[in-house]
Image (cartoon, rainbow, N blue to C red):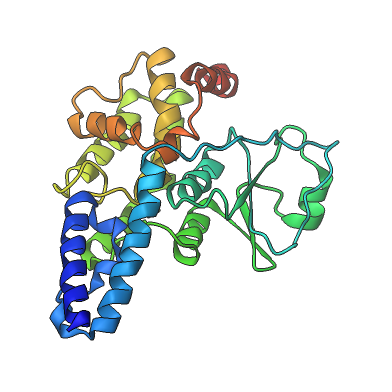
Length: 295
């Protein structure tokens, strides 16, 4: 009888949580019918769900504030390498590294994965020699190995660390997610070619593809309906493309694209992303140095 009463009480809790959290934040809710499993298994499932819920509340409330360490340059000593603690090597200015940084933040891993920012203009020699021979960011030191490549890395962080999952279980959404992740490089090249002097139509077609993709699912404002790795993959680049297109090319990427407008608005509400954002003016100046000579 006590087990039955506890199960009923926890069932009430789970229903309340379903009203407050989206499906991506409830990996523990794979048990749809509590009567089909043992009370003990059901209780374990609910407790996992509550743990995720409280972690999400802590992240979403914005109470997690991190003091960002200074970037390490050629004069800096290395951190304790391969000491058993996970480390995420990034650059504060790199959009690829920003992907991994957002993923880490959203999953609430600020206390689990240490940020090690690198000065890309004055890189420390020890980074290439002792950490990551490719000498790029991002890279993740974990379990005595170093992994890189941003799209691979955000998947790895999502799969190998605790926190709200960022990839769907639904097969249709997974398939669409793979398509969108594969498109990121083509999207980047199309917009960059516009910045270098190609016709507006080149970038326009790329942003139209984004608008179409955002229209596929109607249960949320994000690419897969709910926030996922796909949003993380695109956000750092759209963050840069939007102000530069407006300031230099006099091209508003949001005109005629209401889904994109809403997506940008909702992205800017996500604390894990906001913590990684840059001053738009600084982004514009950075892109001017790269592309103005080609205009």
